[in-house]
Structures are given as C-alpha cells and as structure tokens.
Image (cartoon, one colour):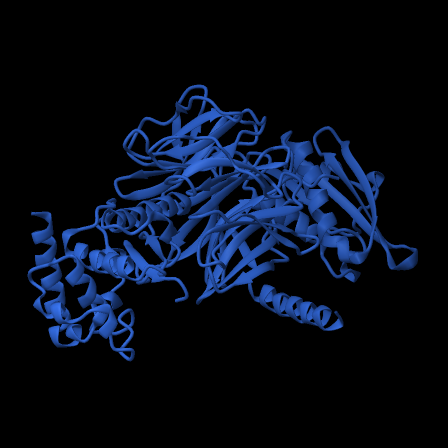
Length: 176
Length: 426
C-alpha cells in the first residue's frame, strides 16, 4: 500500500519535471528497476553495465527531480508533507544506488523566535527529512543533519510569503 | 612571515575603516521616576585635549535615565578646588551633586586628570580621584569617572567601562564587533561571509565564544581578543551551538546534536570531551550558568511547548520555571542570580520578560514584535536586546525595572545578538 502511494507520488513528480528528460537519467531509472515499481516501464532495459558515461549530472539537471533539494514545512511543524515525500524518496533511492554519496540536510526556520531555539527547530526538520531517507535504506552515517536556524533565509521580507519559503530543509551532496 | 604580518596589518586597517562607519549612538526613548540632578562642570584644561572628558561623563550618566544634567554653562572662572565652589549658587540651580575637575599636562606627554564629586546640600566631598594617563586613555578615564559618580550616587556599580559585542550583518557580510558600552570605538574582531551567532563573553572578558558557520554548519569557536587567535572547541557531527561560560571560565555549556536532537553538554573551554547533561527526546538548548555556578537554566520543549527549566550544574533532574504561555525561551540569569530574563511569545509578538525565580512572578519589559537575545549589564540594571525596527535588526536596552528605555541606533545594516561584557577586572 505504502509502495503504491509512493509510486503515485513519484509518477506525479516525474510528470511535473518532464518525462522525456527523466528517461535519459540513468541513476533514477536504475534504482526504480531495483524496487520493481510498476509505473516505471522504461527502466527494464537499463542496467548499470549499459549506463552511458556521458549524461547530464542528475543532481544538477534542472529536468531531474534530484535537482530539487528543498522541502518546505508548515509553521511550527517538522512533518515532511506528502507533496515533498517523492522528492525525498528520489534522493534516498539515488543514495541507495550510489553508495559513495554523502549528504547534509540543512534545516531552516523563519525569523520569529529566538535564534538558538530556531537552530534546534531547524535541526528537527532536517532530522525529519533524514528519517524518510533512512527508512528507505540509506545508512544514518551518510546523512549529517545540521541547521542554519533563521540565519539563512531564502526570502528576506518579514511576511508569511517569505516565512513559508524559509521554513525548509535543503539537501546538499558532499562536495557541493 | 613578514608577508603574513603585513596581511594582518592590512586586515586590521580594513576593519578600522569599517569600524569608523559602524558607530552606535544611544538615545533614551523613555525614562521614568525621579532623576538625580547633577551639575558636571567642564574640566579646566580639557579644551586642549583630544577628548572632552566632562562631556563624556555627562553623556554616560544621562544615558542611564537616572540623572538630569543641570545647566553649567557660563560658570566663570571654573572652580577646580573645593574652596572655589559656590555651593549656595548650585543649590539655587537645584543641583544635588556637583562634579569639578582639571586636566594638566605631565612629563612624557602624559596628563593628570583630577576630579571631585560633591554633595551640594551637605557641601561635602563624596569622592576625589586622580589619574595619570596617556591622552589616548582620556575617554576610558571619563568612563571610570562616570563609574565612580554613579556608584556614589546610586549605590550600584557603574557599567560605563564595560564593553558590548554584537553581530552586524551588511549584505552577505557578517562582523562580530566589540564596542564600548556607550557604542564608541566599535571594532570588528571577526568578519565572515557566513553567519555568526550567539556571542558570549568569558567571565574575565578576555575571550568570546560564538557560533561560526564557516564550516557550512554551526561550530563553536572561542576567540582570544588580545591575541586575535581562535580555537574551534566543538565541531562534532551535526550542530554545535549556544555556548555559555561557567562562572570560573573553565567550561562551556553547549548544545550538540551528535547523539540525538539538540541536547545540552558541558565541554572544557579549550575543547575536549563533552559530558552530556540532558537525556530527553526533546529539544534542550540555550543553556546559561547561574552566577554562583550551581545551576544551568535552559530551554526545553519536553513538556510540549518550549519553556524555561533549570537543572543542577553538575547534572540531575530539571525543574520547570515558566508556566504561563506556550513559548518562553532563551533564559539569562541576572548578575545577582535572583531573576532570569527571557523571550516570551504572546499573541504572535516576541518580547523580553523577567522571571523572579523565588516567586515565579513574570514581568514583561518590552513592547516590540520580534525582540530577542536579552543580555544583562553586569550590574543587573539594564538589559540589552535585539529588536526589529523598520525591517532590520537594531539593538535596544531597557532598565530591569522597565522604566528606562534606550534605542541604539546604527547606520550599519542589521545589528543583532548582543552580549554585554563583564566589569573590568582592575
């Protein structure tokens, strides 16, 4: 049941990002095959040995879901909302496939409240993102959760529109 | 070697240039209660000096909101000895206290600053001091004189010779600045393109601990101010933040996430093995030692909402201290250990409040919307904090009885996260 829900979320995300481009993206295809998701028929013909050596970096290819790195949270919440689960799961699967990858999840808050308590709240958000990934098989030691609290707002204005952009977790791959 | 010295000199020169633009000016916005009328006469010979000593003394006293400066314009000749003071005249001008002084050149380019403080009603001398100093020390000496006057007239220690530190954000540039308590002589002691937060003075004022993001994550650093050296004292897996000094300066309480979500640990001030102080599934952060070293106050949301707790500094069960409202954070003990200043959220507004520990009584002191980071003056009389004004961070201060308010105005971008330094040790 969970797997189906995940698949639907994935499919939705992939559609949103443009399916043509995603087909070229080998790592995503490869691990999809490994988890035998029925909604991804294109993967069966691709295996690690036939992986083309020159492709756009999936982590930076704007058409690839892996280039999406931010998970946004509701006020006073560290729940990873359904709309971001697919994104986080895609990164988890990429990491399961690419065993040498390590990431930091950076938690962030809006500006309201004390700086240090916000740092701790941001940490809790980063932990929530990490939890989704470890459940899918990424080893804990490959995901460091850190927090910038309210110190690195994505939007500078002092209103709800900005605050919503600042309550987020960002996924950063080692070396980025 | 020579090159690096040159680089450091260039670096410092750049800082000095920045500092010149970054001065804070302090305005009193509210004052209540009775003010002591004081006449501070120009010091004989001060016009020839680089700093107008009597003006600095008067400004220090006036800024507290506790004194009213009595007009001393047109007094001629200036009295410099007790025998020359016309007490009846000063009684008529309603002065209760009178300050006179003189500055005379000494051998070797030094100057002698003498001052006397009188009780005008009793026509008696309350204090008399003499300082032989280099002219560069004139401003610092003026603050020492103001400290003496303040203590004689109020019974409390003056804090005019103390320093404050705070973070200035200008664009994407962060500076940790140290300034005199009157906002003068602001100097950047650290600059970075990454955030700097939570500066905390060592009890002797020689070092500042802070959280640096230079490693792309929060790490606790201790910087020696005189030597300019820095040492990373906590850079464990995850977050390292919220440094607080033990009163003896040998340990730091910090918040780490190396084992769990945010929990409180104690580490040696030079770095080393952390000792875990809290074991909860909740956030425990913002530790602060009581001045007697017996307690650590901290913020925890173990009860469902963030509240202030304290635990024995050697470890042990915690006791909840705040019960009203759903958001009480960032505790800071008053210097006498009897009260805790903290940040309270009520109806979406964040304000500075004070809890009297013995009675549990809470008094809200400020009326801002995003007030944060309260820090006590070492005499406990004022609380400096961060406020929002016109969409940017500014410093403000409020007396611990709430009657006097100051605004610290800076032209230099966002000013935030202040920490008031200790009394000078001399």
